[in-house]
Image 1 (cartoon, each protein chain N blue to C red):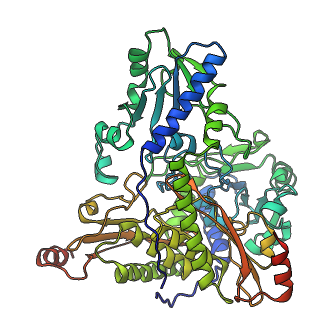
Image 2 (image 1 turned 60 degrees about the vertical axis):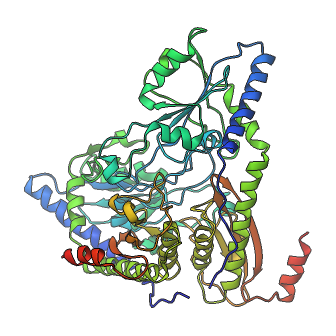
Image 3 (image 1 turned 90 degrees about the horizontal axis):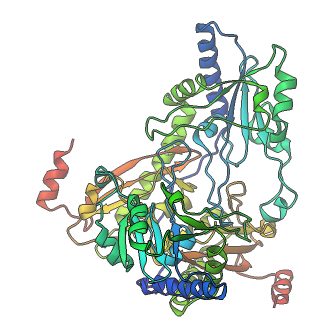
Length: 310
Length: 310
C-alpha cells in the first residue's frame, strides 16, 4: 500500500498579487522609457470551457497560463484587468444562467470572487465596456494592452482578449506579451514554493512507480500509478504534460505516450524504463525524468551507459 | 491493496466494419426510397490534436465519436470514406513530417493502417481529391455526403469534413447525420460486449472506492481511486465524463466535479456520498451512479430515503 508524507499547501493569493505587481513595475518602466503616457489597462481573457466536438461532453477545464499567472482564477469565462495608473486589479466574472445552479453548482456572487482572488474590483463580463469607460476615461479613451504574441515553444500565437464593444477602445497588441512573458521567467519565492511542492509530489510518485514496476506489467499501468499518487496524495489533478512511460526501444521517442503511441507495451525482464512525468499544482508544474531497469537490477551494459551520463 | 479480475479484451475491427455495414444498408435504403442515384461517398473527418491555448502542451487526444464509430481509428488527423455503390472503405492518413519519428514515434506506413483498421484502401490526406476523382467519377462528379447536424444533447453542430479542393465535388449536408445518428442508437452484439466491459470496469472501480472511502478523506481522493482502478486494471484511459464525487449537500448538484466545483470537500462522518463515474473503453462508455454512507452505515433517515427509491 502506498503511503505519503505529502500535505497539499494552501495557495496564497498574494502570489498572484505579486505577479501583478511585477507586471505593473515592468509596464510602467517600459512606458516611461518610451515616453508614453503612464496609463492604460492590461486586459486578458481567461480560457473558456470546451465541449468535445459536437457533444455535450465537457473537457476538464484548465485555465490559460498567462491569465492564471496574474489572477489565479480557476473557473472558465473570466476576464481580468490591471489599471496601470492606479495598480487596481479587476475581475469580470461570467453572468451564469439560473439553471447553472441545478447542473453545475451554486452561482457565486461577485463578492465571493473578490474575496477568493483578492482583487480590488469585481464586475460581470457584460459590464466590461461600461466599467472601463466610466472608471478609466478621465484621460480620454483608455488604451487596452492586449496579450498577443508568439510562443517560441509552439509557434502559436496567444489570442488577444475580445468582447462586444472593444472597438470603442484603442488597443495595443505589441507591448504586453513580451513584457509579461519576461515577468514569468523569474520566479518569486512563493512561486518557487509551489514548484518545489509539485516536484516533491512528482518525486514521491516516481518512487512509487519504481517500487511497483515489474516485468509483465503494461507501461500504462505505471502511468496510472503516477497519476494516482499525484492526485490522491498530492492533490494534483493535472500533469504538466502527458506521461511518457517508455520501456525498451520506446525510450528513444522523445514524446512517447500520446494517443498514437499510448504507453501500451508490455514490460519485459531486462528492459530499461525511461519515465518522464511531472505533476502540476495550482498551475505550477514539474518535469522529472528518470531511468532504471524494470527488474530492479542493472546489467553491465545498462550500468555502463547509466553511469556514463553525468 | 486493490485486486482485480478484469482482463481488457481485444477490440475486433469487425465491430467497426459492422457499423459501416449498417450505415451502408441504411443509406442505400434511403437513396432508394427517395429515388436518388445509389451512389456517392460518405466522407467524415476525424478529430485533430489540440494544443492548450498558445502553448506546446498537447491535450490527450480522444477521437471524435462518429468517426470512431465507423473506423475505430485512435490517431488524430485522419479522414474516412465509404463508397456507397461498392461498399469500399477508405482511410486517408496524415502525411507526417520526418521529425515526427524523433518526437512522437515511428511513422507508420499506409499498409500498417490498412491492416490495423481492416479497411479496403488507404491513402494520404493530401490525395483525397485525386483518389475520389479518379476512382469514383465514372458517373460524373461523386456526391460527398458530409456529416452536418445538431446534437440534441448539446445543441452544437457537427463540423462537416473540409479539405483543400472540396469545391470540386457536389456535397450533401442533410442526409448523413440523421441516418448515421440513428444507426448508433441500436448496438450490435460486439458493441454490447465492449459496453458491458466498460460497465464491469466501472463497477469494480466503484466497489474499490466504496471500500476505501472514509471520513476525513477528500472527495477528489475517491475520484483518484476510481480513475486509477479503471486505468490500471481496466486499461481505460478515459472516462465517459468528469467524475462526480459528491458528498453532503454537493450531492444535489447534477454535474458536480468540474473545475469550478472540483470534488474538494472533506468527507464527514455521517455524510452520504453520491458517486457518478463511468469508464470508457475503445470509445464505448459506461455511466454508473451509486449512493452510500461514507462511514459504512446508513442512519435511519438515510435508510428511509435510500429504501424509498425503487
